Amino acid sequence: MSSLLSNRDQWSHSSSMSEPPTVSFYTYCYAMTKSCTLCSKPRDVLVRCQIDESQKWHFVCPGACWKSVSGGVEDAKGMQDEYPYYRYGGMVSC
Ligand SMILES: [Zn+2]
Image (cartoon, rainbow, N blue to C red; front, side, top):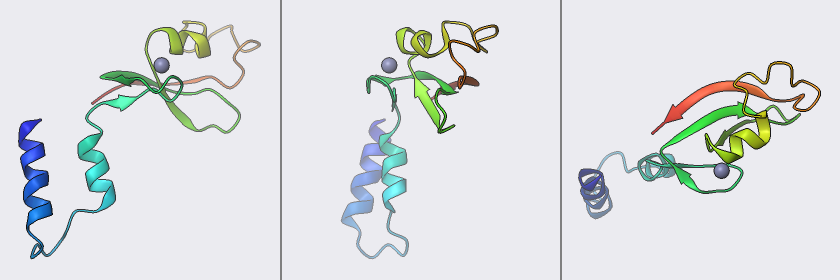
């Protein structure tokens, strides 16, 4: 963590660098901990899943938030009526 921060300082202080960091580079370094897309709380581990008709991948807390979109069943088996858009995409950690 601290080495990343000092790297960031070096980047910002050396304007002669041929390849300055891009916004996504910064975002990547900052996103050591992802946030739940439902409650916005930062988490070390999140469940990647689709939860609505947009078929966008969301990252939700493995606890309450995930249960609220999946019924607490990994692949929502037998829950199609209740969670028609739910699709499990695995656990992700940072
Ligand atoms: Zn959450």
